[in-house]
Length: 316
Length: 316
Image (cartoon, rainbow over all chains, first blue to last red; front, side, top):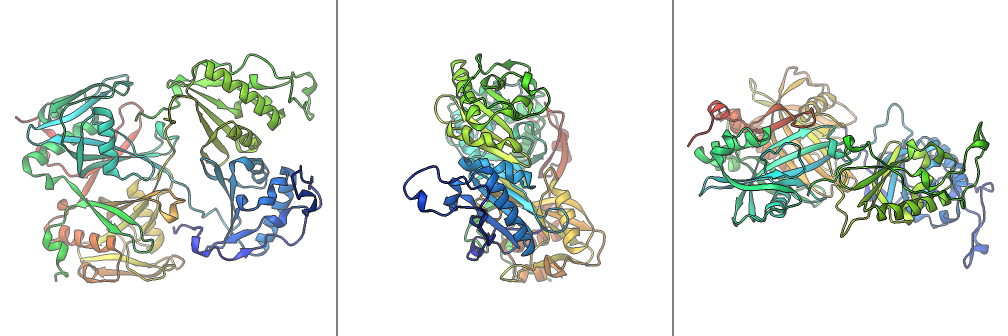
């Protein structure tokens, strides 16, 4: 399914949501200079911007006159606007509501709008007007957590911790949730330092897991990625709030230890394999590439490609 | 950072948010049987449930009497409750608000609450009462998209499409966004079938990318995963809404074609490498494992481990 984007570059066309003024529901200005001169406000303020998918987007923050509108008047105005949008063949409505104008949410909900998402000081509601079930794209579905497997090739030792707050104490790799906009490798290095005091650098991704209905993710899914990190400091100074213990452990001891999580145990074996037969056997290397349309960059991870396959023009 | 969870099993303790009734702000019931007998409602209704991290969680849906409370009375009640929670040493407040009670959002915001998230018919607001900046965990930060590289080993051909709605027509693998709760491989198989009519099965993950500030992700980040799929039907019947063209292309031609996205080109080379030297060179295999505490299962992906490394008890 292609996402039905609210295209930024398609916003130049303004659609008038209605062509008549409401007389009912207007309660008058509550004061302030110039209020007496201003005309009543109503549905005509609900102007939307068209998007290239046939939707209309209304940003209440840009409609200053709504400050003087109560919830009942808004309901009538929105009702009229929806009728107009339907007659114009719009397939969806997006309503962007500043948090301090949240009195408009309940009336919109009574007309069938529901939350698409909300963050910080605004919420976004949607109403599907098209045929069949809604084809509007959902909001973010995953949190991303990252662990750092800090392995010292010289001593064959790996950095492990035990969480303070768990019922059973198991060895695991330090890690935690990515901050918004943070790269995988940066999360690993930051979390390892915050939890253990060890400085390290990103080498590769080793493994990732996907888990749904994660209890710590507000019902959303969890993507957990384990990175191989190379240490460049060795003195442990672990966070007493988060960790009960923190050690440099011989990789063989970690492979043999039964007191670990399944992922830790598996990744320990993977690292032992890499240590003995070459890390190229296990590493997913990273490269930064430019996105085609947006001017953004992204990071791509996969098994390293031999040099001749990177450059060859094809082979028959 | 450990997430400050609202622990389900820690909800047995009820904290009374206040110990006095509000007389101001009560506007009386608007009708209905039994209303005349009921006492005025106020801040005392804002009972919260403690969590194990020192936070308190208030679910307005469980507090039926709030139906008769207006926004101004709620503001006073919440103000009193916050004072009480502070005096009890609570570090955070979570406010869960049904969409039809959204009139309470703006007053909460005026006391410093902001949106944590909202979905469908409810929103969640938070207020940090602890020292320093908020340490509350954020909401989901990533959408997950999946593409299917359907490769037919017998003919050396791979399934590629051109999007209908792009400015420049480039060959790419069919794919799209994961539905909530959907496994990576299932998304790939579903999207390939929806776009091209080809039936296939999941073999491995080949590569993934992470991109931030994605224009189609409401400002959130994008995780895009490319799977290797094996076809078991071959007659193309592509979706005219989404695709302009759809073909089985020789893998060598795709490697040589300049009219592709960087990821498609890179994965084509990776597949050619796998085709010639063994797919074990490029595949990230998948295994389902049990989570330690939750009783859930997850899927783990990494470079396949040789049999002896899977089973050995360690080696010195």
